[in-house]
Length: 135
Image (cartoon, rainbow, N blue to C red; front, side, top):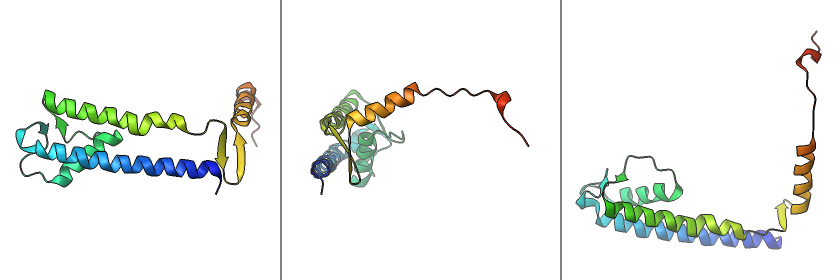
């Protein structure tokens, strides 16, 4: 296996474990508040799965809106979850290898990609609709 790919797979595995841990932890926290009307859509009849579902939806950024925070305390809980998302998922993407992009068995350097992008930027095609040939 190419050296860069194993690092990327290890990073994905680590992020997945953090994701699962955070979602379950916050699911339990929200479950503890379900009877206090902190979250619209959750009540004393809501189970742990509902709370983990809501946490997962917030953590992934989907936010469907069927459950949402109603009080300042519940908003702080969700805000801290969103900040954790940034720390765990989004910010570490900057740590991917900057000098190489791996595609199948070929190694493409960032310089190669930049050169192709510059060629595309400089590409100029004159298109005149009147030049279209019809049968």
